[in-house]
Image (cartoon, rainbow, N blue to C red):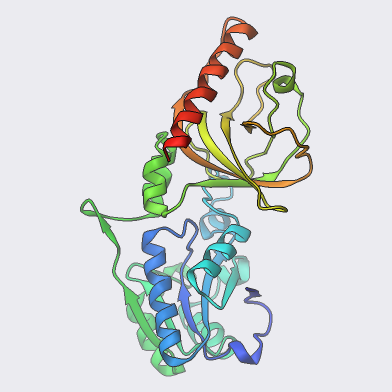
Length: 310
């Protein structure tokens, strides 16, 4: 799948595409509905389909001190968009230049002249351009000038409220990965390169693969039943993971530490993805390492049971 940069010229075969336009960070049910409309429209007219996203997220540009909230990396999004059937992913790099691009410049200049888009699909509440000067009506009006057809997709309703990234984030912060997975249509997953740690887990019989959390949203700290995937080989693993600051040890250090059952290989330096399936308990400090080890044994048994159930 092609990875496109809005600052670079678009290759001729991709001009005339139907573009799904949004942040699409979580690529939840609502995002998928917008993408599906664009892809089906493109197929019906024999055109390429492009799913566009923004990176960094506009919130990060305007509020650089905001707490981490990302649900996916660009690499994860690219895989999700490909699986949805898109021809390419386009990244709008959100910088000062893009932040100061007016709605008119965005539609006529970027979507029209630079991309040569034939059609654009957004959610009903999508806004764009400097000062959020563009909305669905502005997009339709300016699109007519540029020869770009515009469609909007209503929100996907669930339990009387729209599916949204905020709902996904709230579920994860509340320790409910199953609700998040229902809205995302897949488990929330953190991807990273395994780092060397202080080997404390290995010393007590539970060697872990240490990952930093970087810009990902922080789920509720605690112990989870997880699955892992080694990206280089595609190998699938099951395990239990701690995410948090490890109150048992000093100094506190925020990490994701999965322990994979029945695995004895070397993961250092490898990129893995850890998916969250069930919340088991919150982080806790124990009176002794023996008490911690006994609890970890119970955690692993419960994680095995839950993961075997599906």
